Image (cartoon, rainbow, N blue to C red; front, side, top):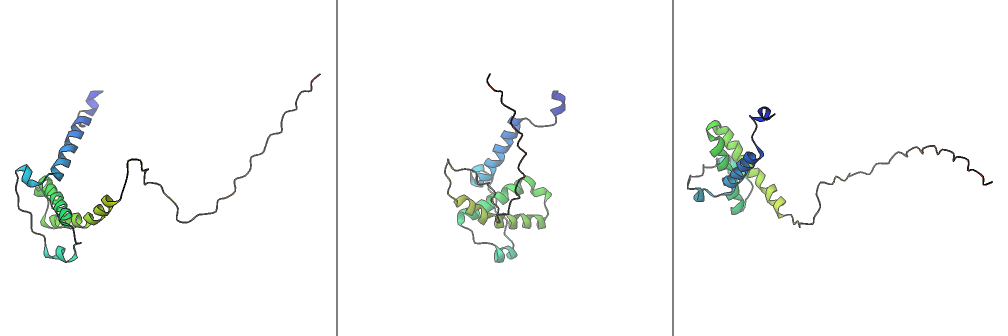
Length: 138
């Protein structure tokens, strides 16, 4: 049975890789010892780019740098510019989402509420069986 899953990674290996990728994303390049100059942003991005806080811009730069570290050799210049644009556009919704106050006891936010209440069809009443005749006491 083990032979079927030889090509798959174990749960432990998956968790290790996930932790390393998260750590690489959140760790500033100065701490990693791989000081690299951030790639210059194209002029067309600066005109349409949303205004980000310094922390948000640092997060965007870190995210872009981690993607380029992993896949930079496979990406064209147009794809790199697209990744920069997408990372920059995704930052404001992330900041709004993180600003939403939550507590440990809060329930899930996945409840779907219809915008329009529709009339429900009345369900047909099931036919009630007649009660069996009760025996008379003798």
